Image 1 (cartoon, helix red, strand yellow):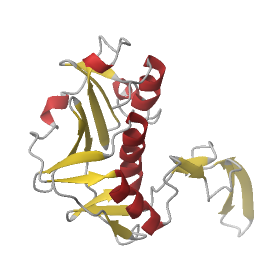
Image 2: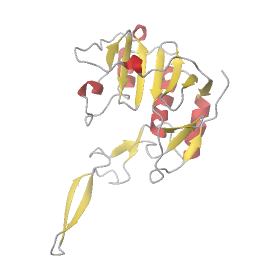
Image 3: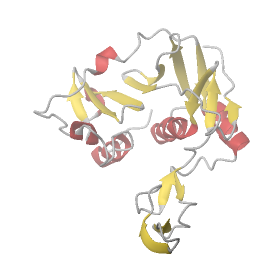
Image 4: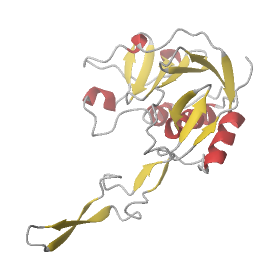
Length: 216
């Protein structure tokens, strides 16, 4: 596994935190708990043993109990970098990017709104794009899904897992699945990533690709 600098760890951990729209401000930053540095937006979570990280992420705020959502390490199979890359290619997802230009505002950050009043008059105005929150970008793969051993996961979260493995120089992850609960990806000793499975709505489903699994 590659050794990362404190700044590289900080950048990696911040991919997992909640954004400014989050209900719980404490989730907007990494935090220390039980010998780990953790970060989560409630859909995906990473915990890294403190021995890998020198920065101080301690907080006096009440943080969620991460141990309650981490399944016991009991891997049934593994996935590789090549397995993940193939699944992204099937869906036409650029696996080198975590964001893409917003297709709803054409990277303009604003969209035109129309309203028809009771007299039949139409009024228009330009306002911040509600899909990208005025940033001009949306999460890459957010409208696509990937299946892992009959569990469906949003492709964007699998892309975060993939990018993390690439940056750490890890080409294989052990996978623990318990019923329909969260999926545990153990990518190294002391580094776990947990992703919540997704219940598909046919209206939102734009295609599923399957990740090939490997023996342990």
